[in-house]
Length: 567
Image 1: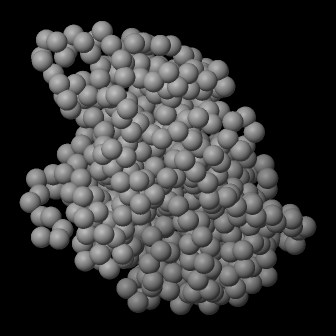
Image 2 (image 1 turned 45 degrees about the vertical axis):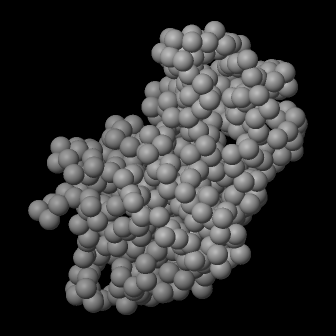
């Protein structure tokens, strides 16, 4: 048997910040060293951040990444952490092209490198655009244990590196990951990791990124699974965390190398003999899983916080209409940034109801955010009189006056403007381009309207109840004309969200929707609105992805498009 103490460093890297990410790795390696770890594993592309998108194609960035890796190895040794084998993923480049790579740093040197084999090309992933697949596997002997490596998608696909490691023989597999969050994904990970551990015939250490990157958020949820599929420990979601685990490994793996299937396996030795026996640490209890709504809320908070901070903003500004969407966005912003960094603006028009104004003020008083009232009636009157606007044009100019007001405050004070629209409205085009669609980030862009209500009720149950009950219970309205409510223009939201779930998330066609029991006239109406609104969605700000198919990278349709379902 070989004993090995392994640290899982679930950290939040920033894309492009090679110096900052190097310092992050150095700090968490120091913590692992102080905990007595022999091996520390970081997430996928921790040195560069992930995803780097077209930065992968820049030779200068790849060269800087490789240099940062070499420098980091030396710095770890100089700081007294050189005896820890640090598994650090980075961007490499060789004669074949860019590589999604992982290295092992030890003794001041890069002692092993390996390239990702399976390159995902679905959903939010475009890795075949950027990277060349790897065909080599490095297995390291660390204190008598044979340790293999695989990168993210290499465990999400059948066969490939895991099967080869199982055939070659390993005592442990470590897997750096950058697996973005979506609802219920944590329910998929454990069975997957358990299957791959069984396939390799060895425990599997899965270390995932945490943090926000543009429209993606990574939830962590790292874990260690035994060779028989038993969960040994699991890290909390949406926070940085270091877990240290002692494993007793059989150290009886066969030692095949050379060609195995499509791979070339190389064995490298850091320490041939096992360590003298020591008293193992108690394995940390698996973190309690979050409830579904707590998980979604945490994802939205982290995605917003990191977008604001990583892009150099300190504060946000948003319109407060007294409605449910702006109230939920305000509550998210306060949880993410603190009330002192959130600025709410009520912008009443001649059509704004008294309850809308009082509900916005109630929210401000409940939460302590900065609050001001900026009436837009005079601005609207100037536009409508000078341009002779009536009907829809008059309605839309109200939203655009609000957008100009928020952007003016943003420019003057340096706030990031938040767009408060939800996924349902975005799907059917129920928003005003250059009006309520104005902003640098859209916190609930991927949240269907019915889920917005669920989240509001859940958040109010957590103790401080930031959202006025009237904002939750009253019928939603844009209040752009007298007596207006959303159902004047849209089906009831519960029904509309069911159609959209099938059409957008499920990618079902007209016939499938009819077979699902929806009325043909309802299908015609909803699909017509969705298809006609693609140009609006292209110009909408980014927002945190929480569903299987978010607008943007997940769902890419042409704007100019004559195809219509049901023709």
